[in-house]
Image 1: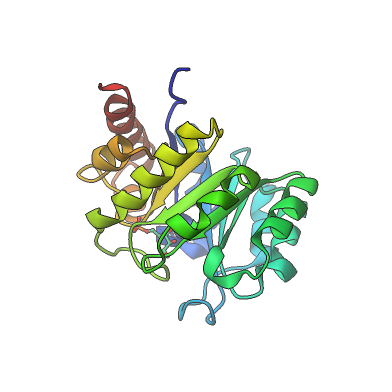
Image 2: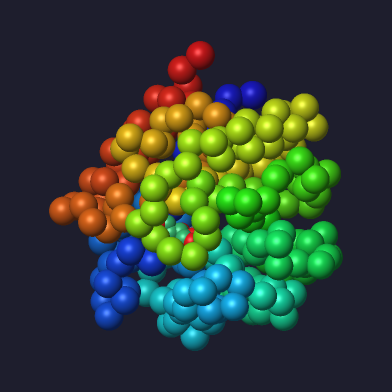
Length: 226
Ligand code: DX5
Ligand code: ZN
């Protein structure tokens, strides 16, 4: 089986919130997904955007939405994002008391189901959940803010999850989120990630679309090297 091609998902957390539709269109022909960080000022201290913004933005682009819920009580809110047309809806394992049931609800609502693991959470206790998920998001920073420094030690979790997925023949996207840039994406890809969130690296670039293409090129090379 050949490796799937890498997914690059620009995070609009680093975009200009007053011009969100334009900022998404700036990567329309380059990005694979648009990463939408939803924060509720409870699960994480920061506060960003919610469902009404996602609903409005949905009409502004053809790109699939990768919604990353950093919120408490995801069972209450996550299915609404699937109903709004999100391609993938990811919630945090630390916030969920019944992740399998919520994954089933998301899939029933027509979305891919994603499980996120924050910086201080080990992945091993959750490996058995993976058959119920399409995406595993490994935070490579502490969830809550963009612009933080990539933590290489988090890649041990990526490798462990990739080994587990391979052994079980699971079709699983492993996504890394936090500090992904030209100088960190290759090591994440080598560890087994195949989806890459990038906020600052894309939206602080002069040409965001070009930045996305460059990142994908580096990831693709790292994924195919023996
Ligand atoms: C932070 C968010 C990330 C953030 C990444 O909690 O989950 O998606 O946008 O931003 P950068 O790429 O700047 O680290
Ligand atoms: Zn995110």
